[in-house]
Image (cartoon, rainbow, N blue to C red; front, side, top):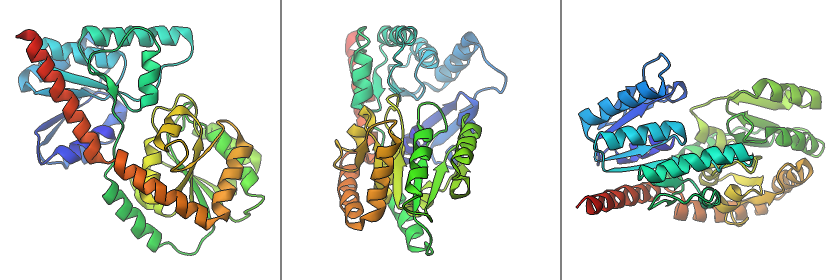
Length: 359
């Protein structure tokens, strides 16, 4: 999605070539194909070994000779892409890191090895938040030159306008609490479901909308059933009308874990004018300005999350004050214009540094 947003922003200015490596990225194919000055190439359906992936990428990069390469997958795939780019003579490249390293030692050693390899390939790491950048530096292997935090961005005006239209057309209905996120272990939907069961005792008619898909869907649906809230909990799956859904929500509850890298859904809710309550983990704390642009509650604490949701549902003035602060913060820090400018500064500076070293 970050790649798509940047491609949409850059289409009048740059010729772009998007390479889709995995099955999940193919779902966005139609949206990329609609863009001007943008070509889409999808990896072969059959599984590729690391070597065949390297050869496939190198052939495309050698043929097209791009001025810069931005890699939106972190780990072994980005090392393959960066190595192929260097072999093809690409001067400037960078990789996006979307999550902090794991806490277990084997995982941290793997991430340390990837980070060290990025240094050898002269591939800067653009972390999606200062929290992720800080955690990568704690691995103790150093970071590639020019690596720094580079937050995600969204088309704020477009999203806000779509949400506003949806809100204006909203029929009278019970209060809606929502969360947009993958249904996987990095998030914490279970705590949200537990919190919602508590909120229901105070607001009997409210609804919970869970937007997203993932491996934990069946487990979460069963948990909602066991809590007796399945009739008021809607699992909406993957949607392409997120701004419209946000416009129908009263509270955005982002229950997640320490493994959260940024929480782009948070800035979407902020732009859409939905009051946010989120887990107090480093990434959410950073995005919400230490609680100025949204409420923060202890992670994994369903009681505190329920209290936060109830307070926002009960107090319209509190919601409006949070929304006003969020609107200012999202425009200052998380616009697609600012995000794109940061990427341009990184890749052009990296190209200049490589040229100077070669000279």
